[in-house]
Each structure stands twice: as C-alpha cells, then as structure tokens.
Length: 208
Image (cartoon, rainbow, N blue to C red):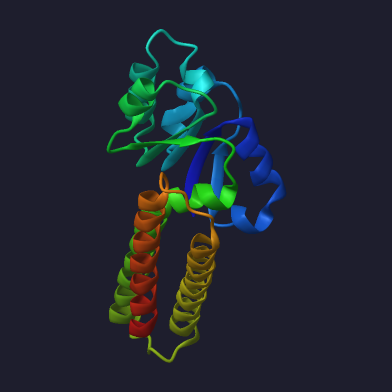
C-alpha cells in the first residue's frame, strides 16, 4: 500500500467515490490545510504528497514551501496540481522529487505519475516477503508446498496480474488519445515508460 497525503479537494473527492482506483492507496491525510498537515507529517510518513498550488501560494515563496513539504514529509514524490500558473513558477517547482500537473486530472491519471513509487513499493514488499519466507523455511523447515508459502505466492501473482491488466488498459488509452504536436513527446515518453513497467511485471510473474 502506498501512503498518500492529499491537500486537494478534487482528488480527495475521487478517493472517496472511486473505490477501484483508490485500492492500494493508504490515505493518511485528506484535509485542505497545509499548515496542519505539516504539524502532523512526521507521524504520517507519506510516500506521496499531493497538494494544490493555491495552498503553496498562500506563502511568500511557494517554491521554498514546497521544499519544506518534501523535507519534513520525507516523501518520495510531491505532486503539485494547478489550474493557472506562470511558466516560470512551474519550472521552479519541477524537481527530482516533484511533478507539476495541470488540473483537472483523474485519479487514474494521477496514479500513472506515481508509477515509479508504486513499482518500487511492490518490489520492496516482495523482497521482504521473500526474506520472511526464507527465514521461516530455514527455522521451521517449511516446504514450498506448504499452505503459507503457496498463499504468499498466490497473493504476489494476483497483485502483479492486476498491475499488468491496468498497464495494458493504460497503454490502450494512450494510443487512443488524441495527440497534438505539443503533447506527442509527452505521450511518447508515457508509452515507453508504460511498456517498460509492463515488461518488468511480466518478467516478475514468470519468475514466481
């Protein structure tokens, strides 16, 4: 599960109503109060923070405030959503740990931008489970045919098959999308990343 903190009313509304897309997301904060979030952030420990730019613009230096959000939350990714903003500000907000995305955006599309974090989380969870199984087998001599071992493998396979299905759907949607000259390079990169992610998942499924 990806711990996510959201300081944006539109995404919070989608998380409440779109149950299917919200699965695998652990919503640890969903109020439109950035300062209150920062006062609680250490205990929340989110991997992804989503914040509307208008809340950053309540401060004299929105870029410095974003950097504070990333530093205090120790998140792997900060996504800033905006409706209107100067290109100069957008460029400054785009960093190694942050993405700036124009609203409106669907929850499904938001998760695409989180793909790197999602894949890393799955990889780490799989590694921990494998280590736990190795420890259990070495200490209790549990066979690979045992119910606990097989149940764990079954869960991994189900998770990976679900991701492959979603990536196939995403790939089809991107190909069907209307692409202007302005967005061709963006869609090209997205297609390439989606195919890479799908290949990784297919390879992982074959190894289990």
